[in-house]
Image (cartoon, rainbow, N blue to C red; front, side, top):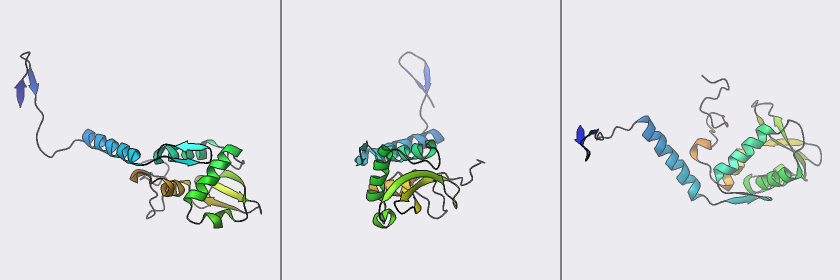
Length: 164
């Protein structure tokens, strides 16, 4: 369908119907994601303030992938992770036990992924999911939630690391 504009040139009109293209679906998804972020209020963990669940998630994701394995995290990150654990873990008192001496990034022996480990004052250690803790404090958008049915907590639909 062609329409004539004021300058005399012909313009193609919009097609009517319920047909949505790939781009419109992407735009709609981005709008929904940004609305989810707007709906959530910020939260503070230790000295750090987060404006949204996505911001909090990205902070910990970057930290877990940038910190060297098997090294204690600095005092600032220790305070942030301790508060994350206290506010976000359903059994934080059991996880913390007698107290936490340090936090480290390690490779999980079962899941073969990098994750946060707490090292207790008695020398024992335990892993915990920052994603689950974040989701309890500020609900994550659906594409970042843990998929408990597949055991895949990467947020990636392809559970293999090699792509297609």
